[in-house]
Length: 490
Image (tube, rainbow, N blue to C red; front, side):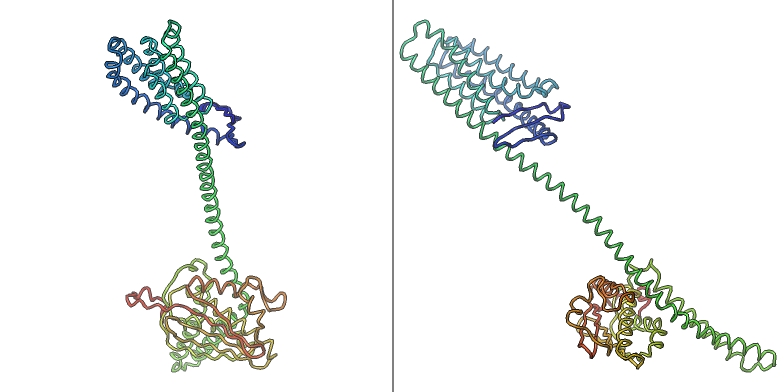
């Protein structure tokens, strides 16, 4: 394993971190790991410094029992050790310490090890029990600091070297064989602890890297998910806007196809009014004034009819009212659709049978439901025209209330639909009409409109016999509705 660490404050964008099993962190990932490592290490430096400042003076009680003759000197050593550890901690809080935090993690545990070795040297005792203090420094390295295996190995060798140098003068001065054997055993024990700490640092570092990689992958996944959610939100907004535009364009397409019928609808009451106006002038010249009030009433009826037609067309074609919901009865939508389709119905010699019973109100956009009914009736007109070729076709519109639904059926005696056509009928751009006679969007838009109203559109058909479309809308049963909310209700 090779670890090449760069300072988190460096501007080098080519920093590279090589870890276990060929895993490499470069660029922002490497910087993020370095910053995370620095932050956690600086926290641990403070903890070790505070712990050392508490424990090092506390162990003076051991000096009193083990080496009472050196108690004062050892107390001075302990005080110096404590001050050095606190000084290193303070330096770690400075910019220079933060830049070199890895060095601080090596120096801090070595300080108590150095003073422990110094006390062993002063005592001239190769078998001193103070070697346990050296192993305690190694334990601090292994369990507190995030050392690399190289740093742990270097620290362990350094502690063993300090212990050997502390005991060497006594050994050279003719220490007893028992003391020498104790020194050898202690050295072996320190070396073994160092190996364990080195292996533990290796395993611990691997765990940290794997944890970092998992967190980094999670961060990337969360970021990608956030980006995708934002893209989906934008796409949904675009789809919603496209859907509104399609509904409006289909509506305007229907108005374009009905232009002749609209002219006919307006022309009849306009001609009627003109005739009444001519008759009025004639009566005035002949001084016959008895029928003038009746003529004026006829003129008023003609103009009222024109105003009604214009109002219905304005309401139907108005784009701004596309999302405004009101409470209304579906019979009104049927009557509006039939009035606007008057000319095509008359021109194609289609007989319309209406069975419109009083049904509960529904909540929705009236002109959208009117658009659905117009589309279904227009399709029925085209269907019976293909079958009857000039003979009278028949379209029946029935409304009923069933359970919590209001149902409207549009049935024609046209050629019917095959099973294959019924399966694709509500797919966008699918049409049974000849090329140039339909876009294939009408029924799919009708289906989406009713779906947005929490309703449904279904079809039944028998080839050569009939086709029946059924509009299903939920009832609106709120008895607290105000008169203003029932603006267009029956």
